[in-house]
View 1: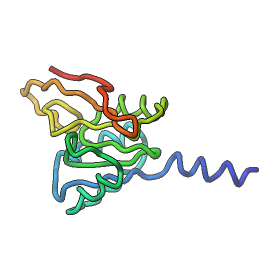
View 2 (view 1 turned 120 degrees about the horizontal axis):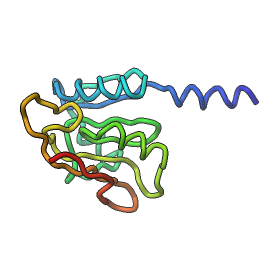
View 3 (view 1 turned 180 degrees about the vertical axis):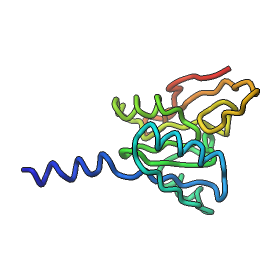
View 4 (view 1 turned 135 degrees about the vertical axis):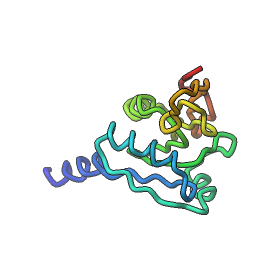
Length: 139
């Protein structure tokens, strides 16, 4: 019985893998926030063919951004706030494969710039049940 429990504990604390457009600096800032908030290592993979990776994960092209991460079996596309990530992982809503923030909105995690007003942006839930607004931020 103990052997069954150990793999689940190990997978819960597994490293986070983030595929990014090669050399994108804002992705590193987002990864640092994720590392701090989740207490796990974030492996950054420069991926020149990230579009194929996004397709395999079911990330709609209309909400694509500069990086894609997998955490606890869920996909996170772009600068998704950590609080939203933790909430969707805890809830694991039926029909939702992950969350996305399209583009690179100013003020989103990793895109904070002193003196610049944050932009309003939506966090979109996506998956087999389609797309819907999961949270709204900034502005």
